[in-house]
Image (cartoon, rainbow over the protein chains, first blue to last red):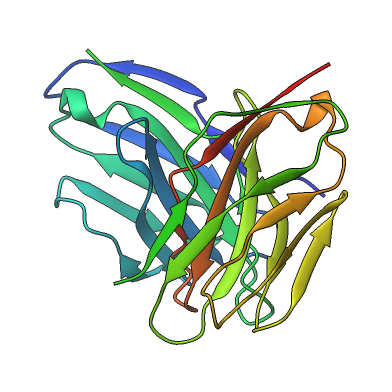
Amino acid sequence: KAGVTQTPRYLIKTRGQQVTLSCSPISGHRSVSWYQQTPGQGLQFLFEYFSETQRNKGNFPGRFSGRQFSNSRSEMNVSTLELGDSALYLCASSILGQDTEAFFGQGTRLTVV
Amino acid sequence: GNSVTQMEGPVTLSEEAFLTINCTYTATGYPSLFWYVQYPGEGLQLLLKATKADDKGSNKGFEATYRKETTSFHLEKGSVQVSDSAVYFCALDTGRRALTFGSGTRLQVQP
C-alpha cells in the first residue's frame, strides 16, 4: 500500500511569508502527527490530529498551525516565517487503537531566506 | 517531562563489528519505546519497538530490550554492514501519539 506522502519535498520562502505543507496519510490511518527536525533542536513534536481535531500540541508558537480534513489528509501552516523555521518537517500517520507505530513520510525541506 | 538521552556520535565501526548504541529515558507512566532509523535524504523508518518492561524488540539483526529498572533501551547488533550506516533515534511515547526523540546517533560503517 502507498506510504505517507508529503508535498512539496522542497520549498524556499522569504522571511515574513507564510507556507502551507501537505501530508496524505496511509489509507485507513486516522491519526496524523507533525514533527520539526533541525540540527540544533533535533526532532520536536508539533501537533497531532485525529478525526479533524487537534488532540495534542507541542511547545511551538501560534505561528504554527494545522488542520485535518475529513479524508484524514492534513496540512500545516507557518505564518510570518523566520530564519529559524528552516527545517525538515516530517509527517507521521498511525492507526489509532491498534498500536503506537508511526509511519513517517520523507518530509518537506523548508528553507527560509 | 519526558526525555530521551542517547550516546553522542558519530560511531565509526568496521564491517562485521558489534554495535551498541545506548539509550536511557525519563518518562511519566509506562511508555512504549522505539528505535527509528533515518537514511540520508529520507524520513524515519521504524526499526523496532517494545511496549512493556522486559520486552525485546528485534528486526534485521538489531535488538533492544526494555529495561524498566535501569530505564534503558540500548540498541545492539552482532555484525554491522556498510548498509547499516545511518542515523539512529531512540524514542518514547506515553500514549499521546507524541513521540519524544533522542538527539540521534550517526553510525558510520567502514568496509
